Image (cartoon, protein in one colour):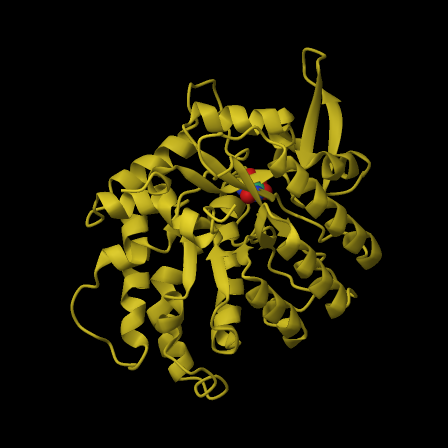
Length: 386
Ligand code: 5CU
């Protein structure tokens, strides 16, 4: 058993870099950070990133921008390596020229954030790597996007890029993005697809449920829709080596993939568009293991395991799929610094729950669990090629 295959690697962990935080502080409309006062009169920073953020935003502090805090969090939870990404809403709200300039600067900043962190001297793998970002906003040119892909590809600690669901205004299945996907595939970068917009807090009802509905359901449904659009656009037929990692274990896509296949079969516009049954494409995906429960992780890995059977057939193949196959495409994450505990605890429940879930998946052996905790990330992000 190699040393690297035993590492704990967090692939879903965010930061607002200082340059981005300064931008949020300079704004007065969402997204922004404002300083208010607690009832006791202490100044408090609050973050508003969603349009209907409950209770005037949430408290925000050094956990969101200070690298020391990230490293302390990692130490506290035994996390060896983090692949850090800028948190939503990235550059979505900016005009194209500003988004383009800022993407370039933030990618350089993130490289610096990772490369200057103290790292173990005993082996090549560093403590911090990153996902860069693209200026995916309306009116940006394709060549500007491709230039930023090339920039990210050359920064040694950036191993992928994080992407929201809007594309340049017409979603991710917009053919104008084809040169961007081609450049990403060629550079061997992993795309981390992450939600921001969710569904309206008031969808189908009126009661105040805090942040629960947009986060628990809206976020994953947004990812489900965007990833499904990509599948329907034939992205994996056009770019078969593209590596797409979905946040929150792919949302509802695993449980809906057979229904998706059936709807495609019955739809005159789409039925002949794809080379394979829709379930085949689930096997091309990577999913984070941020699902908080062993049954959900086990189910998602079953769906991925099953996918290879659909390479040549579109009929249902009987018998249970081998869960281990799917485990090779699932990767531990924490969502830090989101989901802080409401009262002080030694460890964050959002971390321990995800680790316990991995440990408890029926049908995953020790090797599968180690792979999900870190081994898969070491291979996917080529962490041994430092
Ligand atoms: O709590 C939240 O709003 C979030 C968020 O915005 N982004 C994220 O990655 N996790 C939780």
